[in-house]
Length: 499
Image 1: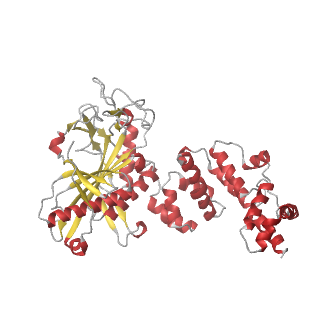
Image 2: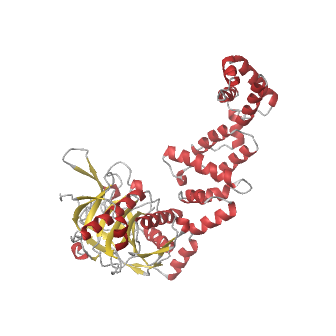
Image 3: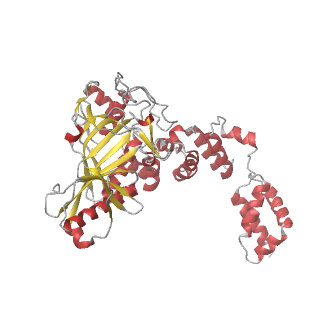
């Protein structure tokens, strides 16, 4: 176990900030949404019971041979096209040798020399939160295997290994060293995350590990070659906040070392978010350390121009185009559209449901009620049983005052539980007809006022919150069949008449 040397972030001052600049490059490891692993038929669901979704290939058993999953190639090709890059007509796999307990083969099958995608860029600008425009180049996108999961702390003195994740397909997206600040890095990751979700390549949940980020940071004096600094790699950063904190801390550490006349050592470092400090973990490996060699058991991938063109024609509208169009077409805020873009399938649900309806009401129900239910169920929209037709029925019933907001929420829960009946059938089955007879509501309200003289007296003395008490009682008496706004108006009028 290497000694961990800690360095905390500190203010370097305006003079140091002007004297030094940073060069930053990112490596994003993205789990692809393929049903099976990259080189085996085992399920890619890595979060099930330990060591249940594995094959002989994943376990590295002698004699087992990898067989490439073509769906992973297609997903990787979609990703590089969305990143404005080029799918390579010929790509091949390599063996990257290193030994860890979570790498059963003793090597990783990756694409160091001939990746499936090259080139491309991400454009950042005012819509992303910058007051300038910035183009960040993509060096390459390569397919590779994920490792197994090491589990610590179950048995003292032992590390357990779960092979479910071993062999799950990853796309590693390597940026050019075009990034200069922690904020640019975080915005780049957020934009790639939104893009890959939008095109259905990955769910990119950083908290689950389906998007992991490694950052290479170096510092140089203003006026020098921007690649002249010594590069340190920060491994396994798992949130945008952590990415910002780790980069800023490492920049400060390197500036401090240079100002004290010390050499910055090329190494791999971790980040202690709680104390905002980076720490050394091991010396940084170079390509010769990994002893790369062509993978002899997996044939080259040869892709035709026709296949690439067909895939290009199947690509959906880009997130940037969707954002601008929906803001203009429906009068939505940037925040609303970006919130929907972050959930695969959400913009499609919106556009299928909004025809002839109020866009702001539709988006409000999606981002509050539907997203609330998804969060409660730990579910993704794509896995929900709610259909656009059911959602549209619910909105129409609300708009026609056929049901109350509370009843609509109950209907939504039923639909997301798998209910197949229509809203109209649910209204009849559960007696949800709205009481719109004002005389009936007034009679109920008068009885409530007579039954609660102390609360009436309190209201007349200026305790206006008593109004909410009576509205709640009326809603309870009508089993939610009264509209809250009608109940409030009637009760307030009756209370004011008693002054």
